[in-house]
Image 1: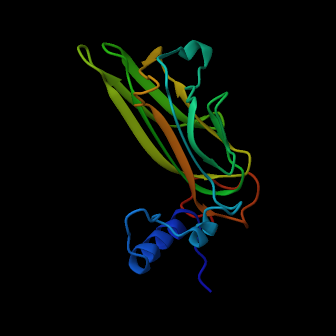
Image 2: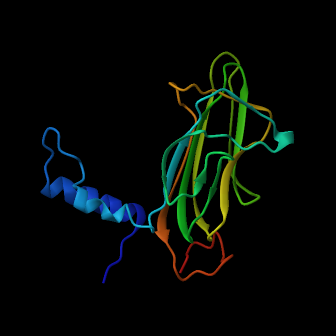
Length: 189
């Protein structure tokens, strides 16, 4: 028996839907009965954006305050503190994008728990600068992932202009891995 989960299952559902249910005006892209994959407690995904100008300070250990939540399936993202807490063990994909205020620098880092994973840097002297990065991580249940200021950073955001976002989703759940299993070993199995 073949088991699919997370993004792979969603892609298969979208492909199946497109092939057998051509779009008609007013129709939904995915028929309601096929959304059950996304509505299980096994699917985890979040996406949040910044709707305000934010000044972050590395000396304060500031986490980016992504305050508008677009999606929070599985309930792992906390908009109060900007931290994602893994509700289940598995392999996750994370992406972040940010726009620096005009004539300011921007250096952001992604952390798993308190460990630096990846970073990004921009400094443009006469315009806006942007940064982005992405990573695939193995997480145990209750591991955290968040974006922190590396230097004094100046992020641009407005309610109607969201250029700064943080997104993550469970790619492959892993029921057999133990708490604090090996990270970065290339395989979860």
